[in-house]
Image 1: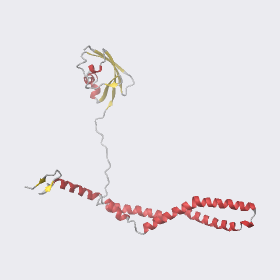
Image 2: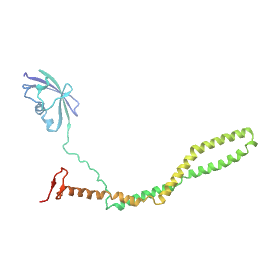
Image 3: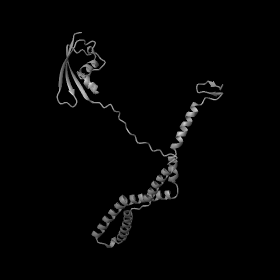
Image 4: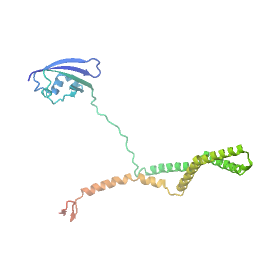
Length: 245
């Protein structure tokens, strides 16, 4: 095969100027891309930089020979030289997993108890705005009822104003008063259920925390059972029976 003249346009990371170089390959059939890289860019490879040959938008493989790409008598190849690759491995420090075993079951139980006590105090807490709202609705409701009974003795414009105020009161009661009352009742029910002893957070927390310890023992027990030989007369999963000698 005829020799090939390669015109290399070199792009190096960190360098502003573009390098150009021409190289003549006398034996394209026996010359690989990897050998060209080692011959022309030995220093970059020694520094563990990435060197890529690009032709026609495709990266030329190191194991391929020049003849495979049908480059002709002349070819323009873009050479991309990357930064220095650090050889030091990156060690990621993973935070140790905190398992609640038998040793710290008391700690986990006490933390669960503190959380439950805090939730209980929040349930017993009553918003003062709810109390003020209840007093407002009760007082205005009584006043509107008394005025409504005397509406026949009031002037026309006062009766109209009374109807408007009654409509506003009903709107506030339905859209704001009843939802707040329902929320207050639900908080009271939760507080009563917690106070009746249905939830035992300390015991539950210790049970949850101690579930991690037996799992290891069970796991080792399964391994011991898997390693132990079958007893005499016991049929194996394959269907054959084995006996001890």
